[in-house]
Amino acid sequence: KDPTGVFAAKPEAGLIPKSTFSLVTLRFRPNKAKWFSHKLKCVLNHSEASALTLTMEGDGCHPKCELGNGGDLYMQPTCVGVVSVHEYTFTNVSRIPCTYRWEIPENLKTVLSVEPQSGRVRGNNEVVSTWRFCPQFEKLYKLKVPLIVSSDDEIVNDGDKPLPGNTSSRSLLRIFGQGTTGGVGFDPPMVDL
Image (cartoon, rainbow, N blue to C red; front, side, top):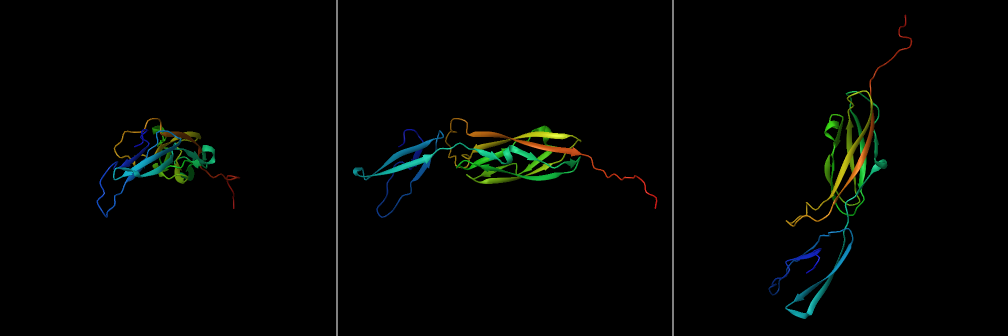
């Protein structure tokens, strides 16, 4: 048994009848972002002479995503009340799967929306989000939307207590857009034919 609790085996002990086998599940649950190693001793028939040693190793990582284009998204100038659509990519640069969610502030929900707003991304993979910008006023918009990335231990949680420490990260996406009014002008304004 690992005294740190990082590595575990289930079941820890048992009986294997003649001419059968037993499956043992090994779990790695790091409590820090570092390299872990532990030697697991498996004793058969209560005989130290037949003991097997299994070296278990694992690398604990923090979830981390990198925003594309330096964290900036530029929406094209758009007429007030009209929707502009733009795709934006971010990358999970950690080796572990993560969950993410865009937290659009309540006061910006009439101006901005994103699909998907949350989801899961595997290690070293990208997510393409579709952003919709609908300006309400004729002005220059400079908006900030947080991206919250968390470790994906909800999907492997087996009833144990949550891990200590902060397992989430926060990045800010800066969105620039402009609300304009449309119109066509003629010069000269009138022409006699």
